[in-house]
Image (cartoon, helix red, strand yellow):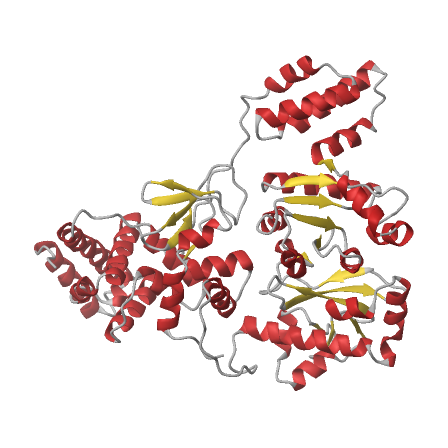
Length: 584
């Protein structure tokens, strides 16, 4: 797929200030020249996520992730680069110029997967309309899923095979389709393949923008597993995906209902509850909670009432509370799931159940109370200990006092004694593991060298005149490490074309996501100079540091018996370096 020009990318970057964009996902607070907040990409309790308005870059000192506004949107929304461009364009009502048509030969791997999944969803949907889809149609009829809902959610059916062959005929190779999770390679050694999903009712899984990124499949007839999802792929992260969120986010409501499965979401949607989503697989994750936080302020959990459903509810409420969402739990008496409840009692009855949903702390207390005989002193003490642990997890004394008062009154326990017991653990601080240290890939690169190289590259990207002065003294290969060399060459190429660039632009130029992250981290860790003169003076010493290690590396690695001239040249240059101060 043809790319957008640098002018377009610059328009989008300038129109989407990184502070404004990230503030939609992360609560940022001013901290000197930067803004700080809790990293959205890993769990933490102390802010280590830094955003620079001046540099238009972000960096997390905890997990090491870095980037510009494009890479942030790509990571937070699990978008490909072109999807991030469209997202940012829509955000500022920017009219993107048209791109050329896409074929398997001229689009990126991720976009090939998106196109393949789109074709697969259509293929499965079409089969459902044919006589081969009768078993699946009969099942949907029994579950009262209407034709309109089947179209809305793109339901389909997989047969014993055929999808892989169809996609290969359209130009998609077996390696890509295997990596995308659509086919599997035969173990018989015949270089054959077979469809991953066979004889299943198919549920396309959409991302928030409406693209198919995976499938869930329910077995038709006998066989195990009953439900199966697509594997993790470059476009599908199960822990960060919620089924139905592409529709629920359009409901424009502060509340989203969380249910257990695909059929529950569809049944709820049919009944008018379009603000309903489900986790993928057996567990609702912390990542999913953080994503849900972008689209609502409150959640109501509507899980099955069996033991497994209760455990899932307890896990989910913890993640939701940690993410900053109000979490309530609605129970459905005399029904195993929302679908059955709606069929037996109707939509209005479900509305009433949602109105009386319990706060998650009250729900947890009720579940705990069922495990103990509160008329027996020993068991009542055990119950109070469990309630104490529940209340300790709450963030503020006001929350703890409010719930403690209500729970004490309901279960006949001593409020003052409970409060004292909880206070005993107030000073205990949870263990927070130290930030992960990034390992350097190349032996011999010292901290001083890395800092010098970062400062040099930042100056090259930031100032055209200084870039020219640096290149007069320093060649790309002298930076030794591949990412430094690549950045040097990228900046010089852009300068030679007359492009007006910034460090954030250079990050955008890097095609590989890993290179983007490394580039952003390099540009983030540079000091601010009092004046241009101070910067130029510092650059002289930094170039010296880089060149000294470069010549030292050549001297140390060169075999004098086979390449004596190279050894002598490097030694001579290093001696010259020591005798003359580098002046820009």
